[in-house]
Amino acid sequence: MNETSYTVRDGIGTFSFERPESRNALTFAMYDAVRETCSTLPQDGSVKALILRGAGGKAFAAGTDMKQFRAFETAEDAWAYEERIEAVLEAVERCPVPTIAAIAGACTGGGAGIAAACDIRIATPALRFGFPIARTLGNCLSVSNLARLRGLIGHGRVTELLLTARLVGAEEALAAGLVSEIVDDADVRAAELATTLSAHAPLTMRATKEGLRRLKVAGRVDDRDLVALCYTSRDFKEGIEAFLGKRQPMWTGT
Image (tube, rainbow, N blue to C red; front, side, top):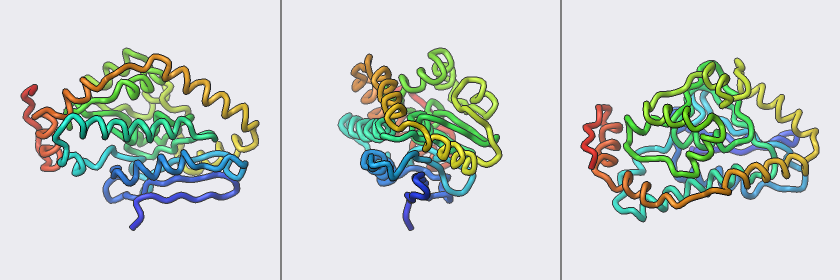
């Protein structure tokens, strides 16, 4: 079974995560499919907007499939993973057409990162958005990911969200500017919005997107020591096994 799908209809591309039985938990192949779709999107006007969504109606994407982390042993493993994720998110940001995240239900971890990299986010009332890694895995977000979130909802709210490891609901997300609309059917509204955008000046939209992207990366810093600290720790191994074993992790700070 394919883990993702991509279709184009009436000039609107739709990319779907297709693992509803796992709340669309993201495999490396799924991440790579996002990057490939966004980085190779034609610029001849045949695709005017791109919708990203999750199949099943219960989750946009519930983060990285944690079984893939069991093979991590070294700092190089961690850096390679974060570089892979950054390439995906940068491809979303560099996508030459407007991107719309149609979020139904859970949008956490890597899924939340992809949604945050999109130009516009709309959600259903069932939205649960966040990065609960302080109580699940014990890893960390890259500085570039932190910068994306800070640009969306502000320094203080990002700090509180990550330290408490809580998930944001729809009304709070709307009030914070994280999403622009709460709708009963995210797919229908995303299609309407994509149709509206497809009638706008493509170069204006492309220049606006790229200008804002450049502002985001202007102050990029080296975070490899922080990534290695978390991903090579005993706590990270414990977090993986505790999550997969459906038990509470026993943190040691090592």
